Each structure stands twice: as C-alpha cells, then as structure tokens.
Length: 181
Image (cartoon, rainbow, N blue to C red; front, side):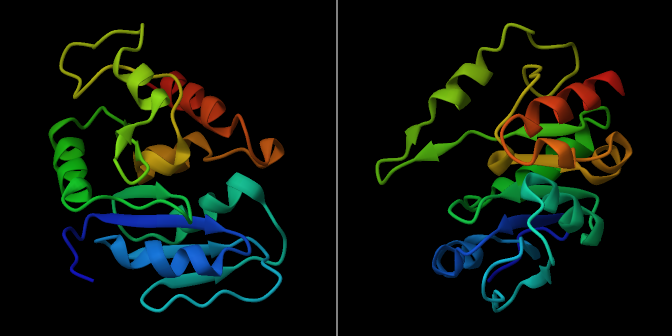
C-alpha cells in the first residue's frame, strides 16, 4: 500500500466481516486501525493495526481506534467501504487550511457505476448554508463511513456515545461538535 499522507489514520470498526476487510483495507492509502468488535473468530488483517475488543460496542468501537491513532486526523470507513486515491491527502490539506473545521463529510459513491449516494447529495445542499471561511456547507449530520475528523476535536467532544450503539450516533456527535464550536 502506498501511503499518501502520514497525517491521517483510517479507523474501521468491524464484526465478523473478514472477507470484506481483505478487499477494502488494502485500498486505504494511510495507516489503518481495525477495531474488531468481538467477532466470533479473531480478525487478522495484514498491514493493519488490529485491536480486538472483548465485547461488541457498536459504533463506539470507533472511539478505541481514534484513541489508538497517532495522527492529527482520523478517517472512518466501514468494512465494506474505502477512501479513493488522493482523498485522504486532500482532506488533510483542507483541514490544515481550515483550523476551525472539526469534520469533513466526503462524497459517497456507490455501486460499480459510482453513482452519488442520496445522503451525500442532500448534505451538499444542506439548509444550514456555507459559513464564511468554511471549506464547504455546514452539516449537522453525516455518514460515519465517510468522514474525516480532527482527532483532538473528536476526543474533546466525547466521540460516539456508547448508549446509542448504532443508528443515530452521527447526529449526536455532530451536535456535540457544533456545540463545542
């Protein structure tokens, strides 16, 4: 794997999806931390730092990966998604240029034809507008598998709340980050 930036760590939380990881992890062009959410059999991923949890923490497993990351920025991916070439380096550059931005939501493309995901299309036209000096429109929600966060802002906001397990964890974190400024 060719590393395109040493400023980003990709964190992937997974459970019992060994087959998908073999396809997606090699596509990430940055250091990868895989958080094994108590899979039935331990996961091994060549080239990745694997952290095995004793219990399934749902979305909050990503917090462990962020704590483990030694980079200023962390990109999240699901075990069936990956970051396209050049996107991680570009995001790190945008975050350096915009120090008040805590999170960048990437465009999600799906299927063999790379069609635009409807949630991504909606976020691009978010009703919150485009704040002066911001790198893009303000969003108060996101898809976890397609964001890059400023590590220190994520940790200061408390990360993904364990009580939500899955579904809705993005909204609470988005509000926590917004409340923190």
